[in-house]
Length: 556
Image (cartoon, rainbow, N blue to C red):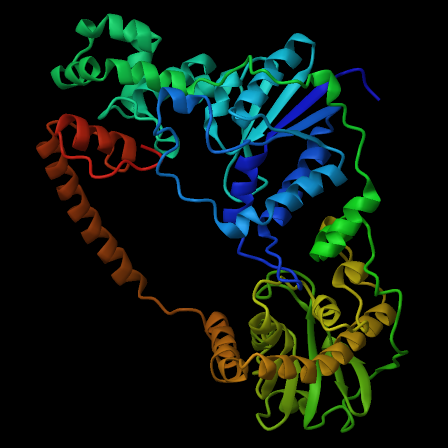
């Protein structure tokens, strides 16, 4: 334990939106949309693990109208209506926070930002280290030596940490000047108008010279550029109002204090119950919670025979085939063994014994001998690296399961089997381990694992085909998806033939043309600049050349 106090403040609406749009529209077996809840849960779990807060609060917006609308009625106007698929998930997100015993708060007429700003300032005075999590860069204005603002980047768990030093490096400004920058350039996401024609680069340049919007407006005569002067003069009041709108209130009338926000850990039984209700199997496993029909319970005993010679009882007209590799890159991962399951039982054979058997290779390459596999593309590629062409693939239970439910993510044979209520195979992670500890087990254990995988594929053959028929998807799967997967496997292993000399010559020709165009652009612009920089290009097009602005993007 430590005496150090750390308060984590979270912008609930912002992270819920981020999770909703970062993940595909998922739903559970009850038809409840779950992508925002799932993403939020992942963010929350990582946050608690990484930050280990002593105190924590998630702030939410209380409604669409705030005190800022009294200043500017169109504030946040033009925003798209919250998707109903997200709205229906918000109560579950609140339930999730309650299960984790994370306090949540909202205040009518105020935004989550104002709650966070008020608590951050108060907590810092009380000796807390403060971490703020949001997807909205407006909150970076709260950054200090003791308050770090983490802004979500791509995906849902990657963040960029804004400290005063980082803001100085990124913008050349102090955190308190972020509101001045917003006042000048505006913010289309919040419908803050700013000064038309002033982008981020111009705003930063002006603030480096004049420091604040107010000081700039008192010294407009000292600004270089006639058109810019005119714009600043014309939109003086709008600039001041925009800065006001962008300023986070740090004295909101909240009735909660940082001292009230002690975090004591989750009610684990409530968390597990909620995850089970929502069907979050992966998150349950991360918590160490075995599924109710766990791997420890075997439906039936299974004898797996180790074969050193390939026999006729193995090579039937219909069989499940396991082509096993250890590693994600199936072009480089070595084969570690094979398994077959048919009406005669389950059989394991080592890589060496299988690939030295002409009978085995002929069977694999016989179009009339129908094989059921897991991940046909991977199997095709793996065997082609050993000069064996896999033919006669009649079912790919992974691909079939994906066609039936594309919202599910399957990791191995066991995960597909569980989906259909089967407990035949072990998970790969249980047998091989994970990450740096991943390793091939003793042969007896490997034999059992591969044999069970083959048996599971056999059992899944009819179940997946029935599911496809029920969904009217069999034709799609048989005529398009499966043949395409097999062709892609062949394409991947063949690669692409290229004429290197011709490509190099084309490169030279393109480089020459590019140089000519670049010189022409610089001539027309009257100066040299980095054409690949949207910011520099924007200054040339819309400020120097005065081209009409049709629509201002989110980034300006």
